[in-house]
Length: 390
Ligand SMILES: C[S@@+](CC[C@H](N)C(=O)[O-])C[C@H]1O[C@@H](n2cnc3c(N)ncnc32)[C@H](O)[C@@H]1O
Image (cartoon, rainbow, N blue to C red; front, side, top):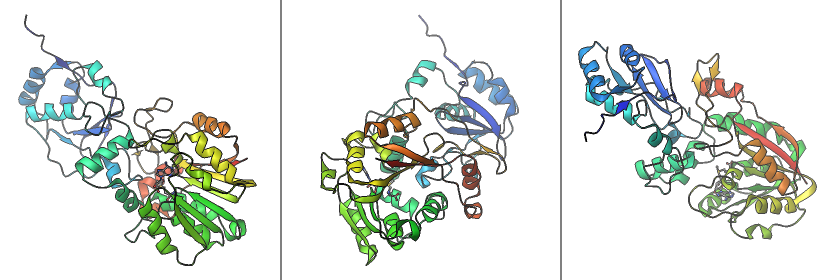
């Protein structure tokens, strides 16, 4: 029996929009892009075709400069780099050879031949060498940093947030949204003389900010390198730091009860919904319940997290009217942030009440440093902040 020659088609997940030199084909789920200077070829691919037909079309028709790859894994440059994976100033060559074009279109999931096999690839990786699944954001980033770039993700995290000395923020959205929120909400009149716990404090940037406003701050983090760094630059500011493996067993039991006016838990609660690496974590209920115990009555536990809807969504469109394309919310295969109802359930389980929710705006200062990030985050908030009380 002779095998049927497979047909190839463009999956429904692909959209086209105008690029700088051609039409960009964007698979919105795999976040991969190919630029076409060959509009006739796009028209030809509207119906399923065999490889031989596609190759013969390319060889025999005028297809302009052909197609080129315009994909890069943009998050390797930082969490707040345009996450669309679209390379906006490509240096890649236009391909005009039929076999190369067909190969590129398959590699970038613009052409598929097996719907079931393609869909089955959307799922978590079983291990870092699993090439059969795309994996979620943590896994894709981990793969890119560890396997492709041979970089320690801890170093990557610090460099994308801080300038070389690790004491000054980069001129990116961390500074123009997160820090700007701190500057507005944690002024000396609100925090001077208050006791603050900074959970998952990293290298202590925000602990130091709070200490400079006159607060007495304790920063805790599981990473000894970060804590050493935090301690060494804090000088005689009112901040002290301790290595505590927040995620492990009853490690948080060492915290005093009813002791803190504010507890800050920033960019870390999401690990208790979608863990990164293989580490076994405390349940979120355990962590939040312990933090509630350590909070004074009348005190505030401030949970600041990447926005569960808009964070890591592609930054598309022009600067005046930016837009994004949402591909998931309730059932995430790429995203790693909890939904609003998952968060509120976790708070309720720990007996915490939501006092207020903020969606911090971007400061106008961002406009000149990060125009695309400014445009998108003016419309679509990148973090949400929950003020919780007990
Ligand atoms: C994204 S960084 C945020 C650091 C700091 N809060 C800030 O906003 O600059 C995440 C921090 O959480 C720490 N961390 C890692 N696992 C954690 C866990 N299970 N619970 C709490 N913090 C954790 C990391 O060491 C790191 O310092």
